[in-house]
Length: 388
Image (cartoon, rainbow, N blue to C red):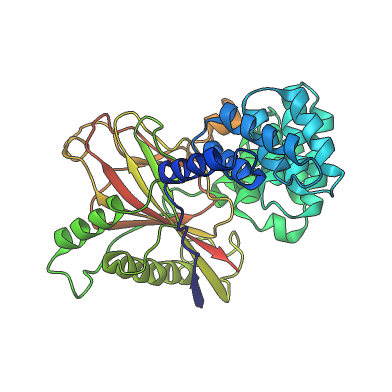
């Protein structure tokens, strides 16, 4: 298998970006480019009201040259100004259709209580094919809430093969089967015993012991760029951080790639050969660094684009290690939030994190982290194999 690495994000910290843009605007108050870039930077900090104001000023200055319709509409959506969202989407379509605009309009229509119209927009976005799995996720979401499961299964089975082969659709097909009481079929897709592999990593050669390796890795993570999702009560997620010049990261990625290759080679023994698509000839390794504190948790989710996912635990608080409950544990299998109350027939499996251990599982398995309830950081590296 040929591996490639996801391109690192090398973003300027938002505080620096905001300061530079405000200084530039003080000198050029009618610069459309500066106003648009300021809107982008404010939206990244979730200051949607200020971002929308900045986009609105840019639009007023140059109606014909304005191009940030998607971002403007997304800010207005987050502010709940749904009529404005629909107007912006209509204006954007005068310059050409896009899947993202369809998705934004669909989300606004759903909030306005128009599910059929919303579904039509998400279907259109899926056909345009320029915004990944987002429209497919939005089409699956309300079907996963329905009691019977039959409509969800029918939708999954009717999808074209490339969509049907995604982790997103496999996970929802498991929900459909579970809702119908077809326990054996659902457990073939999600088997919390055979489908999960825990392995203690071999020590990379340049490090004295695993404690030193994890210590270096933790420093590399904590000295990294500003998290993409930060400040949410102890939740710091950095997506695709730069890894050049970081020896512990590079060593870990080599270990993860090898482990994922081994995992797919075990597909027959793990009863995954008929569940997962064939191993890709080329795969991209997508990675995130995650630091959790106090009551922070990921929330139930799957890695919809992945084939195999891996979690490596770098640092675990003593309060988690010595706890007699599940705090800080990786929990695999929960889907009640995604189904609005249906508990999957496959149950749950709690795995207490141990530094130096790697956990691998199919990307379609639902998972979350139980809050640690301590301010000491729980640090992990999360990686996915994305077929190319």
